[in-house]
Image (cartoon, rainbow, N blue to C red; front, side, top):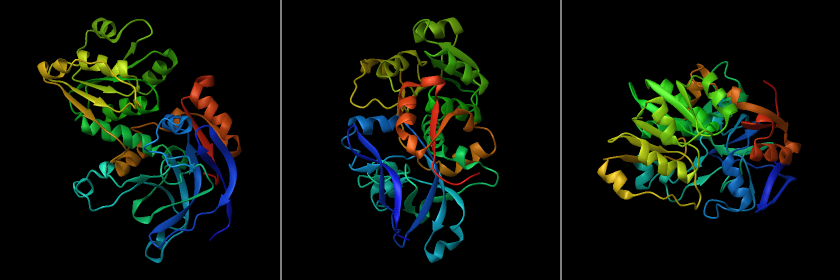
Length: 345
């Protein structure tokens, strides 16, 4: 198709601007997508601040939580044209032990939209045709744009084997924490408690179905758990705070599981390895919505995960700087900030 498009280009740390860029031309195995919605993610701040040098390839178009409409596809995928879609952001080799073993998120030759491949903060993007997921009937493209973080929560919940009868505590009530709480409920956990420092986020967690709330602005996690008289089987660390990870190791029950979804960058956590060994704990990391895209869309479509309620602010593409400022500081009760780029629901 060729031509020019607008996109938010990050040329290097703190060098982000809206520019006119060449519209991407799809290869024979790719589709061309007109982006409709693209969300601001906390991980983007690491790219913007230059604290992810191993993952970022500058210059890069930001954005990895998105939905769009296919406008061009190879002949064998012609039926995709006109469809509202999301797609797996990972581009992997497909032949290494990790890929063959069903863990492409660990492929050493992996690329990812919005990190090392141009992402969704633009009017168009290209992605692999085989990675496309057509939206279920009736699912809003705006809500579907959050399938990626819902998939992250779902994969982390699967890794931690949350299931029937489990008593779970989710640390952090940001978007990943709020999605994780909902996914744990959908997985059959008997109780899912949400912990955070911010009363307004805890109120949102309660509206979304949390069993109980742990207000950490009033004391430590240990104190909050003692007051609530609970000893969790599973703690899901979603805050991205290394101190919270260290507390999770101490506070989960003996023989329990700690799922790690929060991102710490280069920060260090102070833990005693003996706490893991002597209490026979499992610590389970998870990254990307590995194998979870279809289920994530289904959870949003059938209402078991309410994604759209987290979208508190929506801006046009040209107001991207304002969007990121609000997202970074949580101004005006911001939870999830979305860029509306094209099309209508």
